[in-house]
Image (cartoon, rainbow, N blue to C red):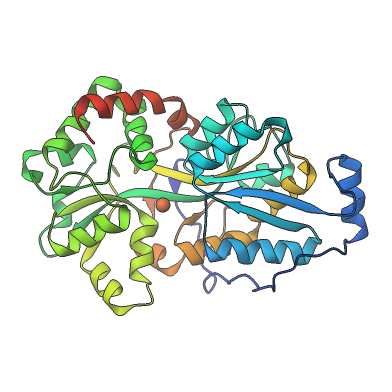
Length: 364
Ligand SMILES: [Fe+2]
């Protein structure tokens, strides 16, 4: 992945929503599916075709997709929703007795952490390799990206001219004193972003960058990415580091006030003349002790399939990982951009170092 340039004809009339299937918790199982399950020898009860998902994503889209998968395959999807850290702790606690088959979470750093702790297993399939390009999956197949997002500079249209913006590094310039909004360094998005700067420039430059951003804080870090965007619109600060889909959600919100607020904020993709904008993923990996391994792989293949990818792209304003899947209109309006081609597994490897740098730099 060097750039995210849609090929021509990539937007054939917008993405289609998934078929909104009824909740299908089937006891009846299609014969071929059952055969496959038995063959893999995983199921505790051979009468059930199930896949147990531990998910940090908690969007309506995801449930609609699980319903559709159940309808198409007869494999019931059971979901446990919690924070990523809780799910990882639970997997560790449960060990070989865990009922989980698939871990779905955000951030390559977390996926890497789950792999390092022995919570995932390597899987390979022609479909997965074709749907998810190298750099967006673990080299050994321990996890695969489902969606992609970029960390951009959201800026106040009335107080900042886009020509003043260039790179993440430039936000440490004196001209941005008391103007930069960003959430806490405890947040994994910031940890991974800093890890990408360590990868690009080494730890010393990364530390001086973190110190420079701290010096330019409009206020001490608080809230989530949506709060940073709202605070740009409210004039608390003038520029914010946030993930693309938070702006997309506000621009397409049901309430007019949120849409109006989001229109006051511009989206700028930094570092386009250099390494590109920092990107990260949500992704999934088959768990180390998956009792329903074959079903988990099948669900994973479904989630990177054309229809699911269109649904992700449309509903949550994330970039699909599958080549050729249309972007949501809002993303099309923002246009193509260069993404940092850094292998995302590096984000996880440099995670601990990034946390130590944030501590030294005083980024709370
Ligand atoms: Fe998020």
